[in-house]
Image (tube, rainbow, N blue to C red; front, side):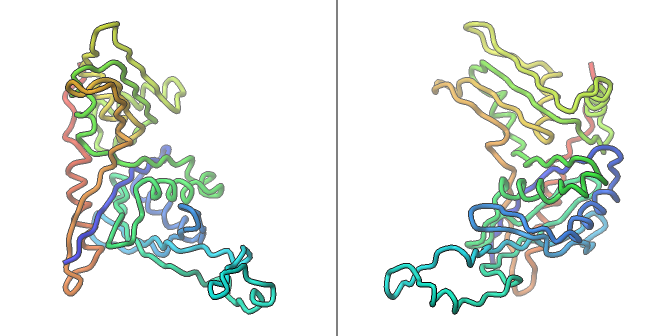
Length: 294
């Protein structure tokens, strides 16, 4: 058996934002063949996209590789000295061949506009922050923005990240930042938030609460619901004490949502493991319909 780690991203496009448009967005991104730097000398390209794994998921592959710059300085390890010009002339590496290939399968849930991706298997790693940066650049190429609008990509946080904030023994400061959500489940509160922002021509909402001197914040229902929306469409940061500890900052961005799955490579595929994790994620990520707004 092999163990794998799966991460999740929330991808939000402006209206109209039907499930078909999310699939179309990824297909157009695939056609672009864009190579994007992800970390250091590593880059990535969308290797495939468009296979329907189930009625709810469409799969693809991200190819991560070492983007070797053959024009950089080289070392002759035998002589322990910089390579000379004559030696460099012997280097013949075709531009279309790249070393260090690592493959990271992912699945898109178009209706919930979430991407679930292989984050780690053995020594191969594609962290949530790297994945977020990759998809943000991939989906915001000029020709795609012209067709679909500016795409927002957010790392899904652990669902208990808000519990860590609201469970502080002394909550001194609470910062909520969010972009308009896509209330695909027609949740009353998300619809209200989006409509409120739309009526005010707002592309971002920021709310800050600071406790009175010597007091601790006591967030009400509305503040907690707004935070719930923001954790998948922005970020929530709390500053205060946990138990009797020192004052610390806790952010939903510090705790990405990841899941560990296992599979038998003799009878199963890593994509199946990602799908199993994705189905579990969907249950966690999409809460039941919010209670009636007070």
